Length: 280
Figure 1: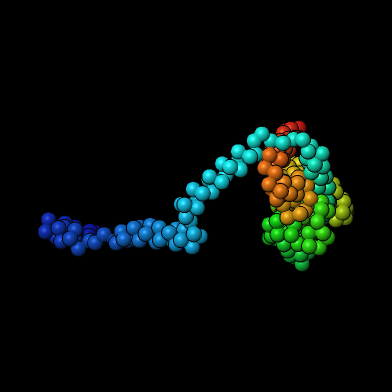
Figure 2: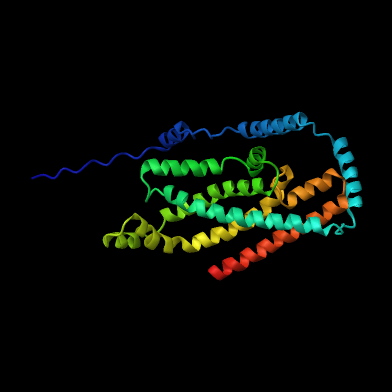
């Protein structure tokens, strides 16, 4: 039986290879070369339009800097003679931060369980996520204005504002932590015939307890800072004292309040850092 072998194909000649090299075309580059300069030109035009729309005027900036130096000159040295007002504002801020953190954690824990997909049915999960999204939608200044209009001026409105913000922040982070826990421990407790409450208490809580403590400390630190801001709209705390001092042009007293606020924030940083280190 005769074995058939394929005949060797003739190799292309130099002319054919040259023609192949000529026929091969490099794909066009994307984006085109003109798109980069066009993009930068469009960005520059957009920035220029913003500057014109916002009336950015170098002369106004120069006048503003001159006035700022006048204000700074009147602010030195800081005036601590009205220390009673400082102490009152600081105490209000501490009370607002502490109480709002406690209420936010107590309300945020069940909402976090509702917003955990691995434990809540779909309607409950949707409700929990809706509450968290609503709590994180608006800035604390907007919420503070609403509560001031609802319950009046003072630290009570500030406490409600910080509590509302804490629910969204604390609930979201804790819900994500619950969704990432070890399912083996939960299933082992369920195998004993335990109900949903016992599963949460003995299967979920021990795994997320360090996270709860860490979030609580961090939330208190954040509330301590926010309490100095929402007071500007009349929600109590040291921020209200600061706003009133600016309204009376008491810049030396305003500087004293600012220094006290800086000290409060630094104290909160130290306390939260030490507490987190002990937890870890």
